[in-house]
Amino acid sequence: MSDWQVLVLVIVAPLVLSLFSCALIGRQSGREKLSGYGLPSLSQYLVNLFRVDARALHSQPLLWGALLTPLFYSVAITLPFIAERELDMSPEGIAVFFELAKIGIYILSVSLPLGLLVARMHSTVQVE
Image (tube, rainbow, N blue to C red; front, side):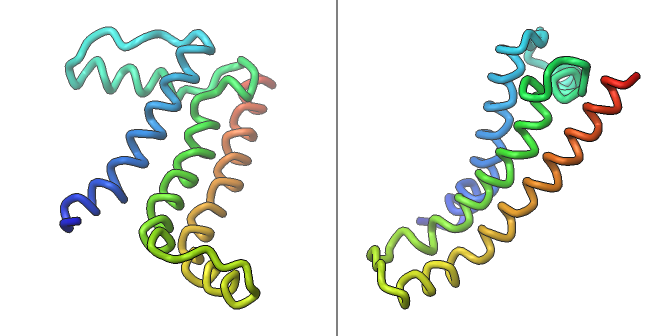
């Protein structure tokens, strides 16, 4: 695999997956659809998609973006390290797995504070 393909796999693919997931959740929760294909309409769509409103917290695309983006990035970064390894359920194998997946676990741990921040913003909007 070339460096360019790895760059796309690790950086672009998780971002596209998380934006697509947020757009699906936004569409199911009744957010407006993309009106055109130019940069101004796309930017306005993203602003409206990630705006926190008084709807239920589970229907906020920003919450799902805050939870899924670190998940997709942690999987994309960890997968190349553990893909070629054989599954070893011994204590040494589990220790090697956690050593290889350490960076992905650190990235995944960002999702909890981001989700709490979105939940706090949502409660502020509901109080208003």
